[in-house]
Image (tube, rainbow, N blue to C red):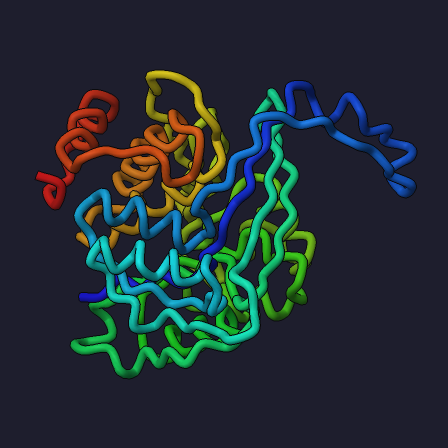
Length: 319
């Protein structure tokens, strides 16, 4: 069984805004928006959707296959060496000459609201990864398609669906670049759609579908709610998953990717969807405590202890 993680490898520039974004945004002047937010505590850290998810999978003792593109620059080489040191398979990380590795600029206000600006750089280049080369039965593999190269997201969704590879569709920040029909086509055949609340609203607006109509194309939806936890939505109804208690508040950036890592790890080891969502909450709690998307640390044993304390469950693959 192979767990395939596609998305972005990027360097994040994280900044904290000590006030509220909404206090400086005049709603009836939004079409002429021109505002400056004075930020503090700017930090450069490893990030990107694939990078963050893989980091948390590695902490759980997992070794996913990473599919993405980086620049043939110091940042790109830095990331590849980082993954090699973790023992991850970097054979499907493409290095693109004369392109920069992706960069993200994220400002977070005191309420946890975020403004994000993303430069995809080398990530727009098509990767040569062919899932047909994977060993074993395609139906045993698991994948997550997170925000990454536009063409790769479309291609991998179609190929996974054709081959019977189980995949989670996580369109995130890339929702605006696709048409409604493209989003529907990528969702079709997925095990799950995962978004935050705003992304789900945008997804529904772009596709023109009602929420219940999404079940024509996928079997479940997970909506993350920040500190309020998450929702698991299936044709049978909605179940709320509480967030796991934290020791102290750091920066919420990357918590959604940490959640996805816990979810994917549990699903790929045969846990049911609800239990997998709960593990996602526990993994995310460690990320929230740190100042950076890959600055937190836990052992499988520490994760298991916190998870059992919160949810009274013990996923067998962590034992």
